[in-house]
Image (cartoon, rainbow, N blue to C red):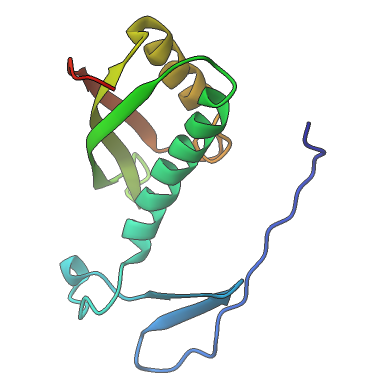
Length: 144
């Protein structure tokens, strides 16, 4: 069992006019740049990419942790993700939707789908944002 609150932190290296933001965290060097869609140079992933990545990876790491406690064998393939940046009712831009789609095969598709729904409802990052997180899954019949 986990004891809350749990704190996470990181530091960003010095920032200058090059607009490249570099995070140095736990042996990982991560960079971010202004997205091409906003006339950036595209030298690194954008904050929008990282936001989408954090939602998806939180979902999958939670799913993997929960599925390890169940007797469900599965294979997930063709994972894709799309986000929609739009303006809210207050006219401020925000990430309105993130759609995760993938194909799966499982020895128990009913329990697999239930676990997907349970994971979505219990993923702490998904519960912390107003972005609509949509999961579009397609069952394929393939040996596991």
